[in-house]
Image (tube, rainbow, N blue to C red; front, side, top):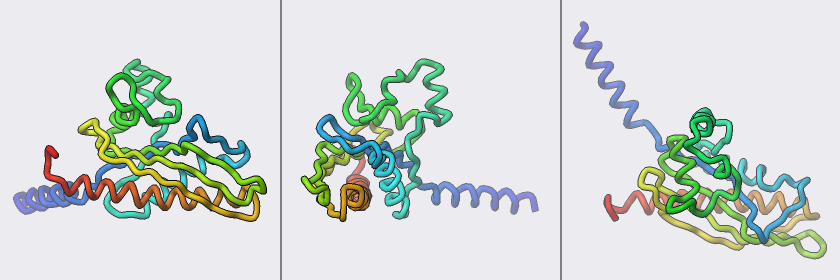
Length: 194
């Protein structure tokens, strides 16, 4: 009886390990220096939430947004192993020789990470059309390397600026989720060490 329970326990642990999904940390969609959106649109937080939700719609990953209030981040700040200036968007770029996203995602024990920057954002004169140039970056956190990037120029229309921005957020999140998962699938197909 005891042996059967032990075997059942070991089998359930093995099954749980197999079912474990890699942790994908999402970083907020950031507006670059050449991109601005009216404050009342709350573009960055809304676009970040939409991207996270779109990524959650795909199987295979546990999707967790980066958070300054995450217990591991707070502990690293208290221990002074993480400089507070790293917590400010945009999250693209490097600090010394390390990618900013990788450093932060390591603290949250992520295996992969994605960041998005809106490099340019412009509304037409009548406000019914918005165009954005986006850059998606995907990282292997454990190997501390960028595994792929994708760029896109998206255009969205609405009856006014607010609805055009809403349409852009929807397009940005769909494109970002598809590109991120495509990059990860291609990367994971490669033999180790490549």
